[in-house]
Image (cartoon, rainbow, N blue to C red; front, side, top):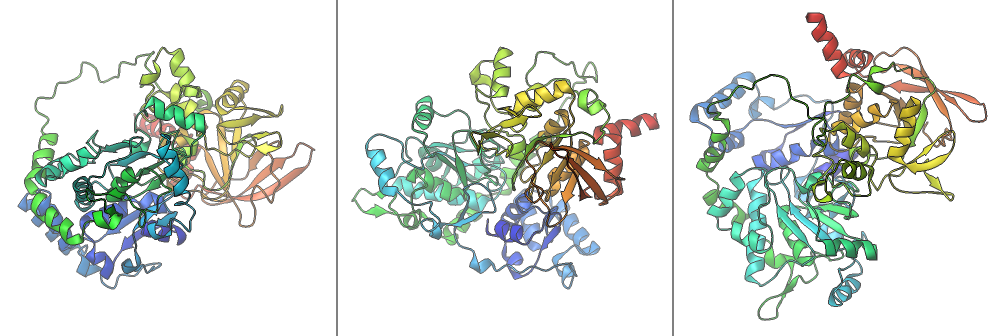
Length: 609
């Protein structure tokens, strides 16, 4: 989390980042993997570490055959990829980060690069009103800042045995001292690999986690991707009735508003052992470094330092309990296909009534029509830091959402609505997720003189504010081409395919922003949406954009060319604004001109045929 904050501040979006130096040498492969896996959160294209003896030791630990290990070492040394060969390598930029300055951190409450040292919880206004929270708890109510979800999640942390073992040791100590999780906290543990279960059982730590509620619920993405499952109905109703500030604490790598659960207003990223501690605390109003988590059998107060394991304790258990045969036991059978039965037909038998997979319309409607880049109306005017979760949420589908209403009409009971992520194969559900995040701020959605937060849009020229999906349907029926105007860092977060598919199917032909996150910009090009960037010093505010305008784009589309954005105001005034075409390469121009990556593939395929 400290590195994520540092690299985001250093503006490495689109860069290839390689780590080297004394600090990098000291990091375990698990730590290196965690840092590299955070790459989308600091916006880099890639985040790499060299191959060294730590790599070789990790390959041995994870059950690779001796011949494979020897091949990797020999190849790396022969080709100059071994650490020693990279000494003196020249880089465009060298950034210095001192690992000795890193303290215990959280990130939040709404993005992964907003680092929050646990020593600064009070001064940041997080750990406040604990007396009020404890008074509410005594009255039988959930406290202010209630942690309704505490989840040890898969990819970022649980591929790192040290972090998982640390969580197990915190749980063990908590159980020994008689601490329990708070009853309103939904706890879960979803490792990225089944090997985690084996080494935790070997160490005797899995029962300790289970006792505190952190039993294994699945392997792979769950809470971090918005799939924590339903809350207890009583807890959910209390959150609604009291408009409670409820939160989630998880060991994932993304915590954007509205992502984790519709009723968790904000979320904090934490290491697995801290997640366990917050399940016991039960509220983020708690100063996790200072406040008392509970009392032992003798009435002595227990704080985090009484639970926290030392590096020596963690390393001893990793050394004795994580074994090569565990990895072989899990992974060798995965690649044993046995007798493979050939399908009757190579073509998929589409089921027209399925809400999980449906034949997509990528050769029809908006995608089959010509993109004129003329007479476009704004679907949304957006602030900075719009994430792919704003564009296409992956979390639980609520009954009163556009997607929920559609699924109900399809005869699906509410308990089977599941999440947007699981329905992404049905475009009729996924389209209704476009801008469906309840935390969205569309500056066009003005009600009684105030911008109203939510999945809202304003249809022009009538000026009627309505739910986003109804606005999209209205424009689709009119065959009205659309544009989106946005601030800086547009498209942060996961590489969400529907964040690009949804807007293109709605008829969006161009997006003009102050800046784009690399992954999402590439996805837009792949769907045939034109990304355009305001020149420095120009933005939606300096241009006085309010959403009543129509827009044209003029100029030849070549890599990073200057095009002209023509703004037609309602009063008849016309303004010509230079913008940068963010088709960054000739290949991207080719993909865009074809209509998108699918159309380009079809063109190439048919040309070969």
